[in-house]
Length: 138
Figure 1: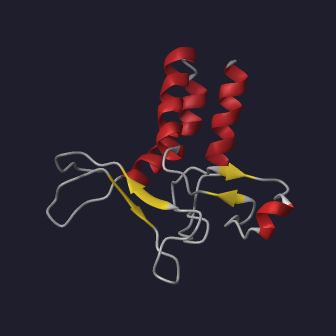
Figure 2: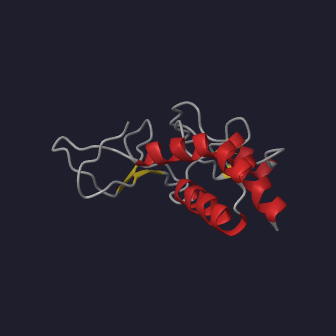
């Protein structure tokens, strides 16, 4: 069980977003939602936004990565795994934080508009988790 959990978390960390790409919703720190190798022909025909075999457009993947890393650490107490994952957990946390003009923090989801000004048919969403009061991120 430990090896499966560690393998999945390491794999997700390796596929963590590095750049901003509005086509497949990649953002630095965001956790991949789907990885296809090879990409199925039906997805290519449907023009599914998979780039480099990756699609990031899931509301919960980044949250769940953080939660799962915490649960695996609590259950297995694997310090080496936690140290290896920690930079990825921090990046995932930062992608969820967004500050408003008023210095407040909030939870929000908004549809990403396509180049035509409306949400694409696959309905991707930008999302963030924020707190009720401002925080200092060092």
